[in-house]
Length: 90
Image 1 (cartoon, rainbow, N blue to C red):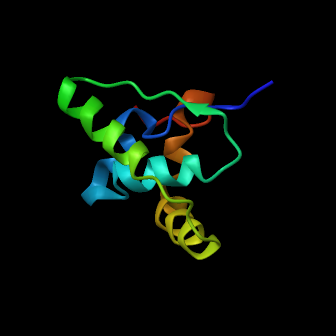
Image 2 (spheres, one colour):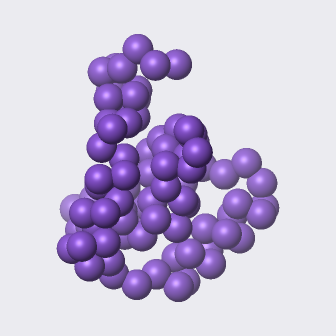
């Protein structure tokens, strides 16, 4: 059995409001968790190529780096849970 990481960029919402975090941070954070694979939707080939490059250059994040990303997204937690039906944010 494996764990699949999904909704990594929260359909782009994680980048709203002045770039909360980058795709590199989002992917690196998720890949630093005990996941078997991640699934990311893309709009064009440029996004695919960016994601491939991020994955190829991936380095496990330290606990401090993980915490820094968590602190960046914490104020947006509720609205990023849209896919669970926990948020009224569009």
